[in-house]
Amino acid sequence: MLVLAIGDLHIPDRALELPPKFRKLLAPGKISQILCLGNLTDRETYDFLRSVSPDLQIVKGEFDLSLSLPLSKVVTHGSLRIGFTHGHTIVPPGDSDALSIAARQMDVDVFIWGGTHRFEAYELEGKFFINPGSATGAMSSGWWAEGENPVPSFVLMDVQGTVLVLYVYQYIDGEVKVEKVSYRKGG
Image (tube, rainbow, N blue to C red; front, side):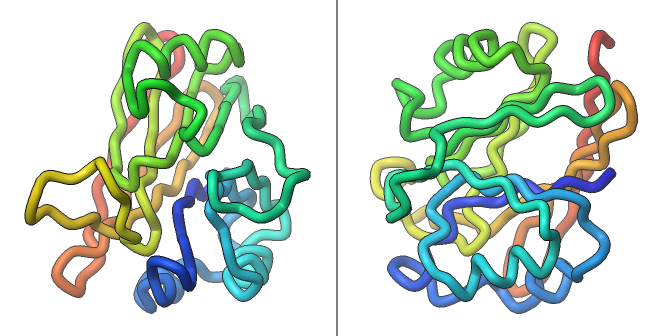
């Protein structure tokens, strides 16, 4: 099962659109579910994501207008429980101890968060932590060294039983680069 994790789009406030090469890759009918980590701030992008997969799960980012969106959710694929949240509720932001606490509270094997606009993936205490970054490369204050810019990114997760294969898509110098990372529950 292919699951897309995407977030921090900020269209049109901080970015004009998804990179066209990303839109081309996200073809309808290939992705079973989308986990959107918030800051989906325009209707056109919402409609595009719904066309990619009708199973669009969204959590609230700090700039989402809908008050009815939950702050976090848990989905199950195979034997993996996957929790996701925007990340503005993680204090301090992106802190591995705070993320571990949130993952334990949600009782999940995989914890996905956003808010930093920076891709990360690592294993800690037997759990897998993923931040897909910002799909548009939208600017964020407070997270970047001087002269450093966000890299547009998203992740696709291929979930088979206890194994999650993570494909990281990054838009660098006008080209899409893909990296692969694997996680096995209990292994």
